[in-house]
Length: 186
Image (tube, rainbow, N blue to C red):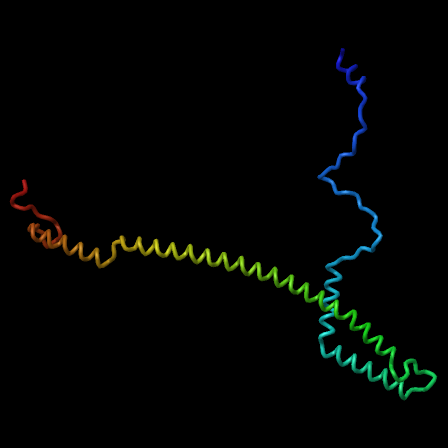
């Protein structure tokens, strides 16, 4: 039986699609809207930063004072929130209910940044300690090596010892610097 006939006679099972790891998967449709968490985080930090300023407190105070004055002393037909100021209370509660999570989100982002900064500082400190230990070992090795190096005073003392030895052997040195012969030299 030829290999071609054998191949034709077999029934091939349907192949499942192979997933390629070098190509991204197609986008799936999502029911929820997509948002950029980084942009939302930056916005929440800006809002939290604004909520913590005197300017916000002054604007909020001025708004509340104008609101109360308008609804107490304003024309009766244009008042929109009578004395118990229920709408004002609702607005302030709504503002507080949005401000608190935004402030917490901003604090969480700051804590994440601090954690990353602490980790980088810790790694830098480890490198500094390692470098300091290496330099300490090198300085110790240099000190040990310097103990074996000839110093100027040691060289002077050795030269003086050699001069004394030469004088003891009575080497004749002429005044012009040329060496003469000892009577025993031949």
